[in-house]
Image (cartoon, rainbow, N blue to C red; front, side, top):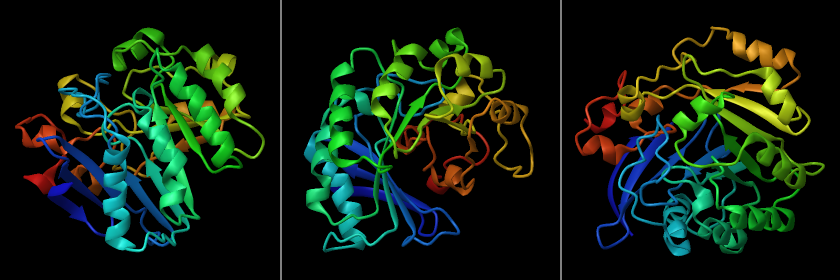
Length: 312
């Protein structure tokens, strides 16, 4: 693997572009969570597909799908970042999180599960917390069954984070936002009934929430128990695709004091709600969710409010 380019801020996030050979390019990210030092929390975000066939309306990574990364190509991204800072593979970080989320839907690549099965044999990572965020495409039952097995064997007791990205409770709008056949709410709930056991982290329902997208507490309560699910609401980041598709964010990342009726309604319904607003500088770096630097470098000109500014 050859690093082609890297840009960012050491104290926030860095985006790496790498050539895996034969012109196959991927992006991956390392980030911190200010004011926490890296020794407290270090996050790696790796790509799992070359492009993505899902093509979510807000995501810049949904171009030119060219297949899956192999297990070793996944490990190449992780190994570069780990060995760069910890050459012996001993990672003394209190919370060492790897998100399989930079480019591609993880449930479409079973090599992700091979990595989860083997990674603790490659490195000493006592603070490791793997994170899978998925839209749960149809036809991926085998992935989720094996994920259940891997989690039970190696990541029980709160050492795994599973997230379903649903974005709205309106099924027509959900199909528009995530234009692929996917599990319905009943199917997600049935799976989580098997996945979630005592001591586990609650499963996250993620809403990258655009203006006008309904989040109906009654619909959620009909399917998802507050005992097993936590709600996360994030901004729509200023990606090229979001701008092209006319999506504006319900959450204003520049106004940390604003309150949101949707958040309060969900809390009143009994849910734990996380309003997740990261460092806005990550939009300029291009490291935030939905951003994909290579699309920007190919000449896209539609991103909003300073996005990708570090890349010109």
